[in-house]
Length: 452
Image (cartoon, rainbow, N blue to C red; front, side, top):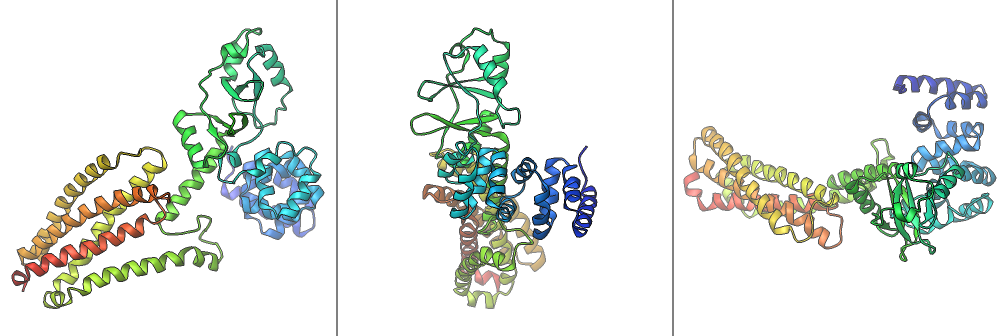
């Protein structure tokens, strides 16, 4: 039965009381009564000092299970409080990919010392060579692999020898004598096959896999597209070096989605939280505010070229924000759809014209609908049909600008090798603001005698 937030808070109170009385073993027992996922949630809510005092009461296996579940920053802080011997014991109990993540975050000297003290670092050490956000940095070396000439009986005996607590995917990979990936079969296929059958006759030779150097986002797309519970990873020679499991991909999906949301909102650091340090938040947000200030000044320059018109027809100042605002809203819709489609691989290269044409059609229809309503409203409010006409046409034009910019800016950034989300909203907003003001005020200048 799931533990509620109230239950977690009750246990936290009991643990804090036990720690205050210096009953660390009792505090550890209270924590271990929970499911490991709830242990991680509770551990994150404790103060750093409370975590430091609680950890020694946990065995190496329990501490390993806990560190695999908590956030990377929390795991790193916990690892730094342990002695090298204790840290090595805990790392030995962790999954290879999780242990590699902790070692990769530690200072080089301490990581080397812990690695040297580990009883078995052979599965962890190769993972340290990969970038954190690559398929190699995400994979685990706990996978099942046999050769094509092995029989079903051999495979079954091999499975019996695999420790039950290993993070084993639901596939058996088949490799040749040089460990190159040549096939895959499910464990169910293995169970229903004859004991003497060779794996080469049962396997599917068309194995979906990725290179160890590809970005983790691409690996996530492949797993989602082909509905895989695990994804094999090969090196440049085609040798099987690891497998990415579904739980790790879920973490990637969450991380990548957070990055895209933050970048669309012009927040540089996707690790920021509302309760992050003040200066960390300022550092992650202020640079983009400066950029926004520059683009806003550009829009102000456009408006300044029409000061005389605005001075003569003050109603223009009232409605120019409507034109720019609606264009910005429409552009944001386009950017969100295009960026999301790029992230999920639904937009292929060479489809720019097709997408642009369709979005332009949407922009025209939306511009006519919104422009008509706002134009009639302005006419009835101010009693001047020409003002309504100008606003309506300006909205139509800015909706078309929003459609074009909302497509071309993200696609252009991708073509330049940049993240489409990182500056799309700033560039698109600049386009709709500046061109929206220009269209609206130019129309007003051409019909000023009807507005006075």
